[in-house]
Image (tube, rainbow, N blue to C red; front, side):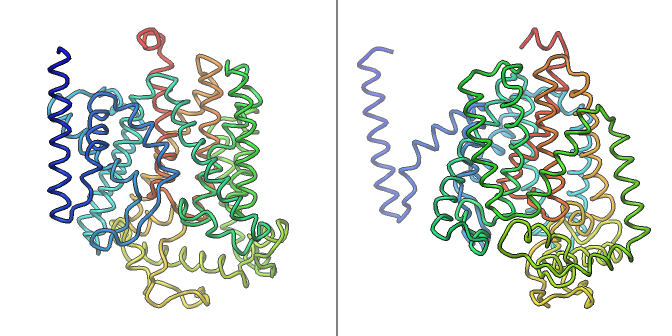
Length: 480
């Protein structure tokens, strides 16, 4: 194309843009200036989808949730419209050319994920709140499409695993610095710690859960950075972010976050001892049987703890086991018991994905109600990644979710112990430890349906799938 033709295209495009803006202003539609950005994103989605996904990951920690934006629904801006746009464009592109590495769909982790998603769809049709459940299914679908199925193929190139991790860590670091700066005006008071990270994270629980994901990986980057062939600048940056993220987690005053790191430490020791998954599951099973068989005695001992959540790390941590007068703990027990009562009522299909918040009120046991319990049951979910699907999708909902975790750890431990390279072994260990922090946190909270955590939870699982599918195979490595 000669210079004159290029100038004509440039002038024509400029005139068209001015016309569209004029029409938009005339009809009180003020979003037309965003059209060039939209065109660029569409072009990236069609030609450089991997770059667009990394940009999206970078935007997630910086996105802001806006309530009641459309039809009473909230939306996280700017990441959720981008996620939905990628989802729709990828489906359209697949219909047109049908290109995808179908080996991903045949991988055991993908199979159990699809089983879980299929059950969510089935229970959406039997739901007590069908519109809510269909929205839940669609939300899960686009999270999986972008952060799992597309990410797995992207991670065929090992460098993209690093890009994905750092694309979240760097903006998260900005959020932590912003939070600590605001928090310093209150002398890092626990009282103001619960929502000081707004507007980027809605509460300290999800903020701490996101931070905890990366602390094991950053620790590995610092301690074994040179074995991973990381540059000195990367190791130094990892040390800086390790200190920053650790400070953010400590000053979030999130007990579940602190406990999740302790769980990761114990799991890390298990990895050093090269324990197999059945050893770890055996210990968990024995501990569970002990707790169940001695529940009354244990509950009595816990009931003697009167320490409320208070200023000071030691007292705040001690209050974790207070089920006598710590309102936060008692309300969790109330939600858990409501979920158990709900599955007794509907053990097969549950009340519908996402429907817990709308249906749990009548199932609250008066024995466990607290001063903050509401008769309307309008205070959120079951505060558990395991009991939430149990109440909403029945036993199959919870079992299929746990099956995902088991298969991920079976494949992940194989990579840790028998990975072809040091990079595969150490990255797999860091990724599994990050998942351990969230799965432990998930005993007390449930955030996987929110963009801030979905990008990490499904993204980390995608990394394990990609490492197993692409990076263990010598022929695949040569092709890459």
